[in-house]
Image 1 (tube, rainbow, N blue to C red):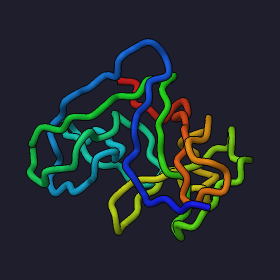
Image 2: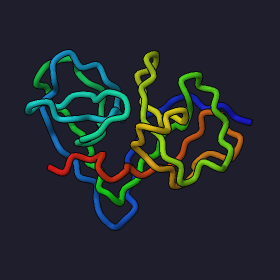
Image 3: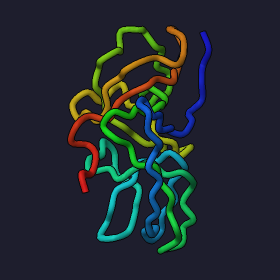
Length: 155
């Protein structure tokens, strides 16, 4: 059984449309990595907290750490999916194959800065698992998921 390391969340389009790429102004003191979920904070873009709501998108590059720098991010639509790591804070979760259609939250690893689908978070739901990228038995597997209705910023 393979063990995978954490990697950035990636947006996948599931229909015949392009991804929306937007620009924003970076909030002060940001240090997020590419793939981080972002929210709007009074006109600036910042990394959200765990189990986010009101997402505006996912970062296409690491934060610069300089306030008002240009931030490029992809904006998911309701029919889009993400590809992300499914694991727990112990980073030892093995894919069972029973996770399809289960709902989980999102969390950030403090060491790498990458976000992952938190298999242990089943009350503050953000995503629903729609498919597997990694084979059954893989530790820290990559999966496909869809953001739940109400998670995206409708503006």
